[in-house]
Amino acid sequence: MPALLPVASRLQLLPRALLSMASGSSPSQSSPASGSGYIPGSVSAAFVTCPNETVAKEIASAKVQVMGCSEWGCLFTFRAVVEKRLAACVNVIPQITSIYEWKGKIEEDSEVLMMIKTQSSLVPALTDFVRSVHPYEVAEVIALPVEQGNFPYLHWVHQVTKSVSD
Image (cartoon, rainbow, N blue to C red):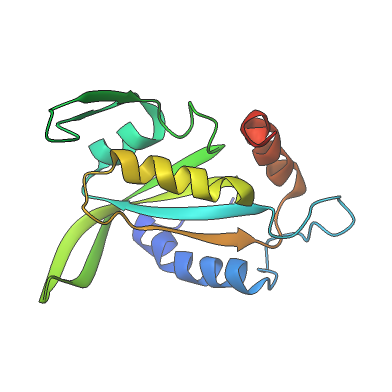
């Protein structure tokens, strides 16, 4: 049995996999969904950065409470993306470093990356939800369409999120 790559090595391969998803080219270990009934691009992988794993896990799988959402100090309870069926699966990837310009200064922060699998038609609702519960002033939510992949998995994504999109 081949040895597993260390986490750092696997994360270095992530950009290559993401590029192949975005370009529609077939990664060497992926099987095309042609002839399977899958409509290319109907599933998306959305990416969200968070300040830490606790925030990412709250957005992904728990009820999120946002205090002081307005000048009236209101309290809203939000269900998370998986519970709301806005996503079939969320991967929480720890220990990324983000370097960016914010308010005229170059910043460098340790963050967590969420990779969220959902139907492409649900990305606007997913974005709205994340923006409503995310602690950042400007939440990063970007999505790439999945052109190819394992058909049973892509079908599962549709089935799990189906009731929301219908």
